[in-house]
Amino acid sequence: MKNLKPNTQNAKYAIVLIWVMLLIEIISLISGSMQYNLLESVSNGIEITPESANANDKREQLIGFIYIIAFLISAVTFIKWFQRAYSNLHLKVDNLSSSENWPVYCWFIPILNLFRPFQIMEEMFTKTNVLLIKNNTNKNINLSKNIVKVWWGLWLLNNFIGQFFFRYSLKAETLNELTTATIIGMIANVMGIPLAIITVKMIKQYSKLEMLLPQIDNETETIENKLLID
Image 1 (cartoon, rainbow, N blue to C red):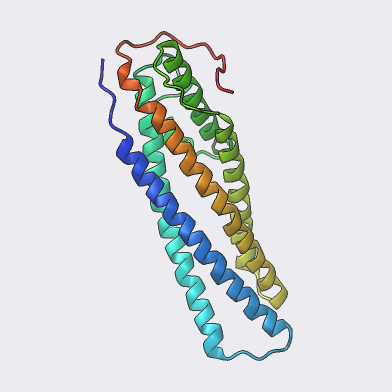
Image 2 (image 1 turned 120 degrees about the vertical axis):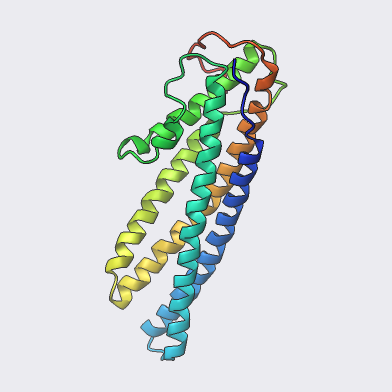
C-alpha cells in the first residue's frame, strides 16, 4: 500500500496565504473608506485637487493588483492542500465519491463549482472522523462538520458580491454609481474577513485529523454514509 504523502507544510502555506489575504482585505477596506470619503466630499460640493484624485486612483489600482496576485497564489496553495488531503484519504478509505484530482477540477467547472467543492470537503471531514473513530484513533478532537457549511456559505456569498462588484464597477461612471461601487467593494472586504478566519480554522481542524491517519495500518472497508459528527 502506498504511503501517505506529507501535507502539513501545504496546510501551513495555505494558512499563511489566507492570513495575507485577510490583511489585504483590511487594507482594501481602509482604502475603500478613503475613496468613499473623497466621493462624498465631491458630492457635497467640496473641491478636491487633481493630485488627490490621482493619488486615490493609483492607490486603489495598486491594492487591486496586489489583491489579484495574492488571491491567485492563495487559491493555488489552498487547492494543493485540498487535493493532497483527499488523495491521502483515498489511501485509507475505499469508494470515495470522487477521484483524487476532483478537488482541483471541481473549482473550474461551471455549475459544479457551486456545490462540488463543498461536498468533497464535507466528505473528507465525515469519513476521516468515522475512520479514526472505528479504529480508536480519534483522540477526543472536537470536530464539527458545521464549519464546512459556514465556510461554503461565506465563500458563495463573498464570491457573489465580488462578481457583482466587478461587473458594476466596470460600468460605473457617474458620481452616484462610483459611490455605490465603492460601498459594494467595502462590503466584499468585510465579508472576506470572517471567510478567511473560518477557512484557517477549517484547515487546522482537518489537519489534526489527517495527522492521525498514518496510525491506521490497514486499508479500511467502505465506510457507511452515517454522520458521526455533531
